[in-house]
Image 1 (tube, each protein chain N blue to C red):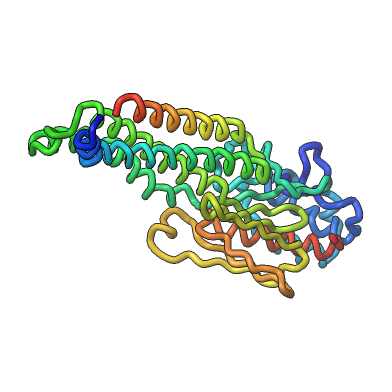
Image 2 (cartoon, chains in turn blue, purple):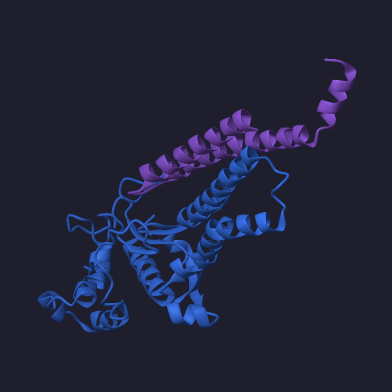
Length: 252
Length: 76
């Protein structure tokens, strides 16, 4: 069993009601993901397992066992992550955010805004624009400016930090933190997932390997757009495998 | 204070500037309160290792904005 599908104690993240077939299907993953020696039982298995072996071999071998960094935008088995509607037997397998590179515009803007008074105040003084403004007002305005920079940076950060896509062993969850007054949380069980694909458009996304993953679900459930997430191909593989495991395991 | 003084006070551009700035700062304090509340709510929805730190920063943000408001009242 691959570590990304295991709990900390080594048990499967899937409910205990998994069928034997499902177990057989997932077992070879252990050997693939982390390069441990082949399981003897799996070596004895028939052709059906061989097919499964080929399928799951695509899961990246460099996938970390557990992501510790709380600011990671691609966290496998993230530590200390939980969510409000989490079930007792539900485990977070993947937590995604927009790629870190997408933060560059607001970081650059914040840095420019932070240093702007250093250049603007002498320039305004030179032009004589500040001569009629009392010193106390200049002081308060300067403090106000830096508070504005702080507010802008903090809001941009939490906008990135709280816009997360969570993949558990039971469902997909999309938390959209649009602004301070609007947030949207949608989820769909894994067995309702019908189609998964991803798009990588542009030079920047190719260089930094991020893109958007599109998950289509059955019925009236919302479709999921995981926008600008890192390693989209790996995300698709992991979700596909989870969906397959969920279908075979008969998860609710 | 006679009516002439009163008119001169209200026509003083700094009076209106101060009024405008203090109103702005007041709404800034309200905004900072909303930010703190929202961070608190989001921490409940997604619990992470830095939830406490984020709430601390949001609280610090509110305190600083309130200090700014007080500075505006005192200095302007």
